[in-house]
Amino acid sequence: MKDSRYNLKSFLNSSHLYNLGHLPTEGFHPLTQDLSERTLLSSQDGINILKEVDLTAFEKLETKKKSIETYQKWIQDHLKNNKKVFLSGCGATGRLAILLEFFFTRIKKSNSVVGFMAGGDAAFIRSIERFEDQKEFGARQLKELGFKANDLLIGITEGGETPFVIGTVMHAIKAKGIPGFVYCNPKKTLIDTVERSKIILENHTVNDLELFVGEMAISGSTRMQATSIMMAALGFSLWGDLEFARWIDQFFHAFTQVKWDQLEYWINYEYKAYQNSEWIHYESKTSALSVLTDTTERAPTFSLNPFKSQLKNEPNSISYLIAPETTSSAEAWEIILGRKPRSLEWKETKEDTGLNQIYAFDLSETEKERRTKINSSHLITINWTSQGLEIVFPKIKIILSPPEKDLLIRELLLKMILNQVSTLTMTKLGKVKNNIMTHVKPSNGKLIDRAIRYLAKLNQENNINEPKVYAMYAKKIFEAIPEATQDSPAIQIALKKLQSF
Image 1: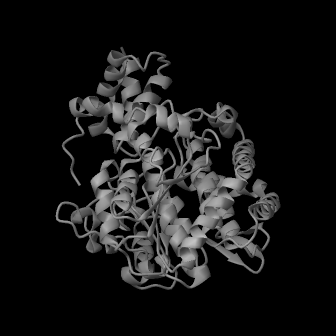
Image 2: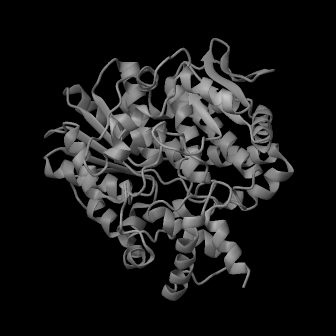
Image 3: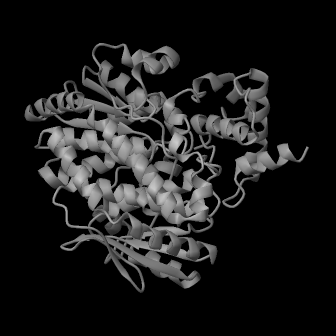
């Protein structure tokens, strides 16, 4: 989807909408300032750092138990009245919304929860540039999904400011629905500094839940701690049957049972494969959607080639998910999602969001055969079995965690494990500097601003809030974007040009 607003001049004219460096979720975690250096010396050291950051985030979440239990009662009272609950999100929170629908349907055998993301299911597997910046698209998607008066809509946004999500909440209000809003920055900060957030948070009809737990392990990488704690709070609210204090105690116990030290083998295995220009294939019968989530999120985070569409002449991704024992794209998608894909057949976006585009991403055994023929690859299977979380490599099997009955806890643990593996593998490959995503792809307003701020920090610039300084760094990023590749991202290109003078 092309958007003419994103040239240097138009971006600078609207940059106040995306200048979010003051928000804590965009900040730099004090525990990870030297993450890249320590990980390069010892993968185990990197694992221990990220483990501590995750644990700290959940300890902070525990202090919000009263608010979460109140939110749970609000949602449960609504479900008891046979009304639907819609969950909206973008990027990581959009994938979370779809995951929560999948889990709820599986546990409750009910279609009462509908999760969707900016761009529809096509965006689950591949980011659709600019979509999340459109409030009107949020309203339009929610309407098309059949949202009615008295239905409940919960907008999920890590930062608390995503235009698409705000658009869904505004439509819910207009349609006489019941709106909710879940976010991970301090409410007062959002009200004081972000106008679009203030409009939502000062609306007395919106039931908001603040889940602020601090900075992310990697600056701005809200696919990590922010999405994990929102998955816990909303999953508990949707189907939990314990008091939150008891549930989180159960989670902490399960967390301590994970054999975190064994992630070192996995990280080093993938690192060596990528160093040799080889590929990784994942398979999972029990947790395919969770594995797909982490795998697809790597592309925008680390400027990797995204999953290849069969309709386009483009390079292959270095990692891929395969739905085992499937023979067609349609069959694979329905097994992974637990339903038929939801596409957007809009005239102006269907080349990215239509059903044909979704099925062009073949996740069946057929695609594995194609990929195996053109490059050396390694198969890793990831499943919950009677023994626990079982990870099978070509020559070794690892049991990372004992069996766990609670589905939410199981998938939370897997999510955090996958986040660690992907983040630390990419760190070893040089795609993280200190705790900065140096390879982030500037594909929308928020990410362009993030790239500008990262470039300034890497260049040791302290006056980034000066308009002329900000404009100069923005100019360098926009000059670099057309030259960017998987191995030479925009931030790195711009930094080299700056430092060559």
